[in-house]
Length: 113
Image (cartoon, rainbow, N blue to C red; front, side, top):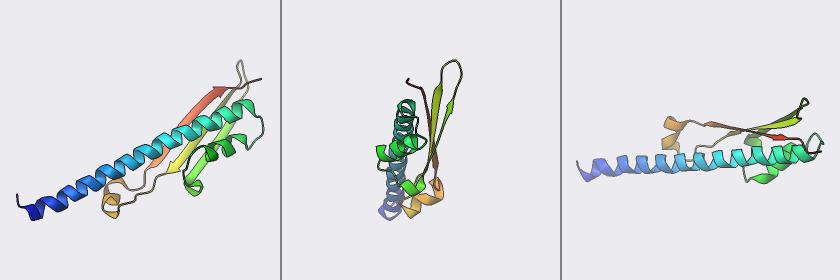
């Protein structure tokens, strides 16, 4: 193949790989936010404790991060935190392939007394 055909194709593949790496980093951050929110909710009964801890735990854009938390009494009281984040596509060329993925993570912990 000619170099004029190969370079644009390799550039698009490289940009796609970088974008996938960014989405993977965001997924790890969303998981960390859910865990931190669950830890905070397990020790602090205040309604906003989980949300505040989850938002503070990562450098994610708060406008695209949604946190839900809830406590369920029973044999062992558990708290569950669900974090949702809409990852941003940085490179317009890769946006047609990845769109804007919704990343979700859930963490549960036993309530501390």
